[in-house]
Length: 272
Picture 1: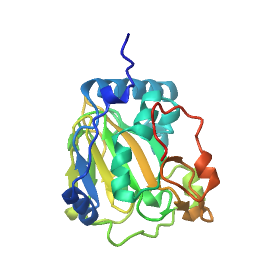
Picture 2 (picture 1 turned 90 degrees about the vertical axis):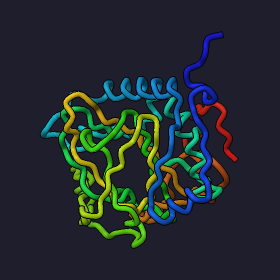
Picture 3 (picture 1 turned 90 degrees about the horizontal axis):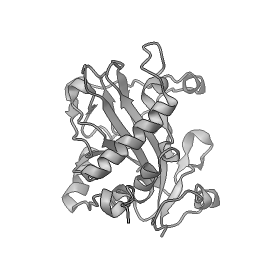
Picture 4 (picture 1 turned 180 degrees about the vertical axis):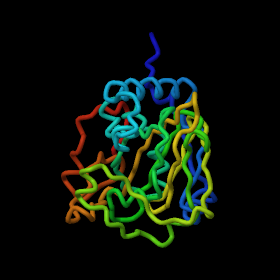
């Protein structure tokens, strides 16, 4: 019988955080994880993500917006392998350890800086692009390439999540125009976060981070970005309506969340 390329047991590498790792995340607002994908799984992820990207995007446009050049939302709608990783992969159990017993999947996207994309992406908190309450959502950046300062790895400020949500006047017009956020930050406190392909960086929703352009002539910097939140998380900017996302574990008081994307195939993903 031929091997199914998206079988989780063959492609995903489960992890469980130690008490020291959880404490480090609480103190510093980020955590680097080892590989979450086997070599075969990484190749499958790269193949499906690039297929989806090329179906939607053209070459880098220096006059284009950050969304045009660097972001492809809802990648789990375009790739069965990503959907299985997002809904039933190793990050789900990690989210349980950091958020609690009731979690939902709220964002999946590709954030690519292909060679030639020299655009900087300014300092921001992920919660500034869509404020969720409770304030314990986590962003998970799984590298599809080796990332370093030359090809546009992330820079972050350790501990910058402690003051909480930073008020930022990102208007609806800004969002419609796809204007990126650029907050004030002290670059002297910044540290680069190189990543190996298949490894993952976890970020607290309030941690300040940014990335420079990709200055490499022959290397891409491709990231699968997934985000998890408390199952009852609401959108502060949207009259505190429930943030829709697939319920992955536990329960929620929102019927809309209980049924959201329930029709999507997730292989053997448990819901409770």
